[in-house]
Image (cartoon, rainbow, N blue to C red):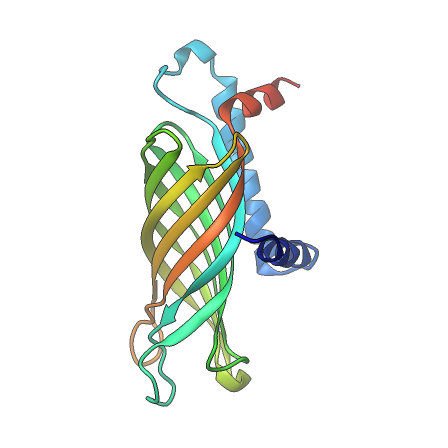
Length: 216
């Protein structure tokens, strides 16, 4: 990911966290949940953890999102092209199971007034192959759809499934390639089904660093 893309995504995150928006509540809720789980896991005796687990693996990331949506306002095209930003956090309890929280905001290139914004959280399964960590996920959440021309701004319940791979670029940085298929429930004229690809970079807190922080 180039530096200008990282800067834009991080600027979007910082701007939204300074405002009393749903994203701010969502982000800090994820951080609080991760901290609570981390405190519980580090409070247990170290010898009680199986040697094969990697408890307390945490990452926070941001990136560029692109995809398509089957929303069709005037039947002049079958799918809209979407572009935007993504923010994500993942906390792994052990070597296979964890949870993930995602935020996407994408806009169709066909109409600059419309956007799709989604907040999600749910379990994920992952596997470790050296530097590569493939994973699958199932998320539930809430989506906000701003209709073309600003004619309405409505929220819908959502479910999503997908997966991808995290790559340990360095001891503190992960690269991500992710695909997510979203279902917007109760959308007019049928369920909305956006498909979104995310390319991102995350700051990775390894287990050793989390343990060191908890001892301070």
